[in-house]
Image 1 (tube, rainbow, N blue to C red):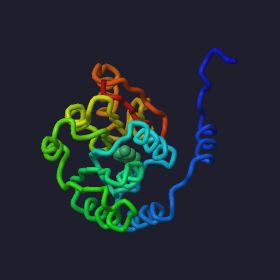
Image 2: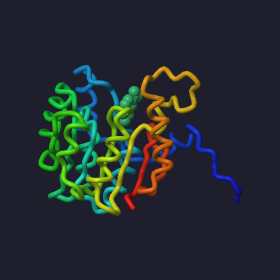
Image 3: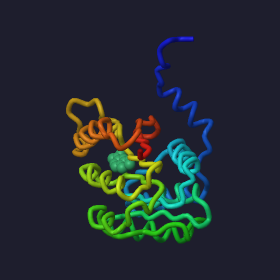
Image 4: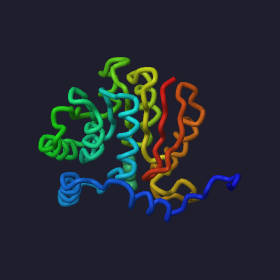
Length: 216
Ligand code: DHB
Ligand code: MG
């Protein structure tokens, strides 16, 4: 056996994808309609979705919070990993995206498990009670991540899960001159996460990189 870890390449990810349950017709249709409605075509990959669902199931999550609903794809994915009486409270600042997500959540199999809160994470998170969630997924404006993390550390119980999307900065993590204006904020946040003593965390290389941390 090699002493070094295997260098994971695009081929490995294709291999993983080919062995991962793909999204169902409903989520496929949601994506098509989001594109038709001019909503940014941004969603987690089926492998990331499956990984997040497994983590939620392992920590027996019942209450999840999310910052950045967008089209509602990840809220529906996460809600499907919860028990019948579970709940995802998801925050969306854009009235247009929240309206789209509401419509699709309503039609989904997990409509009763999802609440959409309209507003910014900055406004809404402070209204959530401390220790009232088992897990959080941060996937909104990257300049807000520090604040969302701080609030999540208050809202998520000890032993709960905090996941943060886009650790690979939209594929521009190593670019000297990244074109995405949010790339520097992601890099700074990654340094913060690496030093964060209140979490045991690691970047999982699914999708655009997803931080996974357990609240100690
Ligand atoms: C992009 C992707 C994301 O997952 C996100 O949260 C924001 C932006 C992008 O590809 O631009
Ligand atoms: Mg994201």
